[in-house]
Image 1 (cartoon, rainbow, N blue to C red):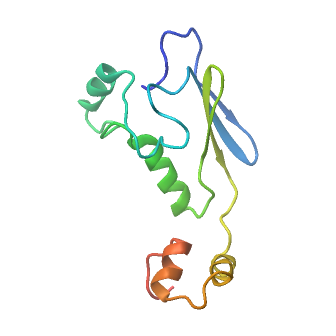
Image 2 (cartoon, rainbow, N blue to C red; image 1 turned 120 degrees about the vertical axis):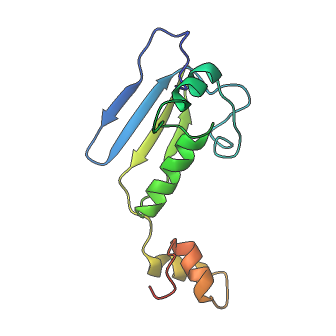
Length: 133
């Protein structure tokens, strides 16, 4: 949906023991960068996005939700966030199978620069929604 169709290349998905890499031909569109890709929106192929959105149970609900969904899914699985790299003529997204720090490590890191921590802050930095965990 998002690739640059003016380039005669395919999207490559590479699976390794510790990661999955998705390499899409073409650079990021318009003003989008790896740093702002989760906050900014731009549809390179708007007609395709709108047509696919009309299917029952479409894979896309809105422009820009794909990577946001990937970042949330990785966080929910307590894995490190995806890495987005802009190459000369491609964009690579790396999904590593590396766990986040343990809650204990995250809390100890927080306490290195803070005198105390509240339960709500601990849950937030550890991505734990339940008050009793």
